[in-house]
Length: 403
Image (cartoon, rainbow, N blue to C red):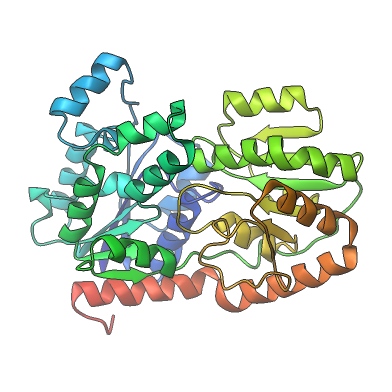
């Protein structure tokens, strides 16, 4: 097959979060098929570009120009923009032009949009005639924005979510219905989409993890450490840090003197930095080259996610690295993990704090949970297994499942 991935963020080998899924899909799919990538992004370092281009027939980057967010512009977008306000955050005529040029230069059997935000470029696009279109939904934006509004109400965040809900359900689900196939990362995500639009053709292609890179190592010296990882421009990650840091962490710090909360990842927001400035036990690293050294110095990995959907690859990475995980049920969505066996599940601030303290202080229980979690990940969540499922689904879409 000739496959083109269109991506919201350049998926090089060192990126964290959702884009690492795409990098590994490109890497392993290229072993048997021809793969190209079109992505938003500035010119990467030579090392970053080489880590992807070695697997690609063609690799094109389109500079991302952030949407204007003034009040007048928002009103104008609401009234006359070709897509709903939320999708205007990623609307680009340059991306349409680059995609058209690529499909005219080379015949692709299938184009895969990774993230719904870029699915708009293959929806109702005349350049796509004769090309199969697959939309990979890492997170349904309508469902995610609706959850924010229901949780935040008439707060600033809630009202912004309400504004972004305008026209979102109709546009997003019409877009999915226009695809030849829709992909989700979990059965739960598939069920949510079908609950709104039962006629969709949805397949589950799970997340994965590099079990050779992420493996247990020596803990070394250092204070008792609880870690979270994320891309913080993605609001569910920002919310998780503020929620845990303000409502659960004070209890952890009181019960485990000297403990620190290590917040790793790209784009920490101003409210996160303010929280760390008020509490010296909270350390924010910003973007890092490799998350494994930070996992190696951590005793517990928390995933106190309350918003959004999809699959959290960070949980798999922590499990593979031998770090016991404490998570909300939403944070562990899609994992066949069992509370008390290979993960600790908690919802309220007190429950999250209590589970964190147990993992910090009961090393025997922490060791049992982390060993069983590592076994689960190695058995069921290697990247190669996930890409084999993707390959089979794309083969079905193209019409030659034997490929």
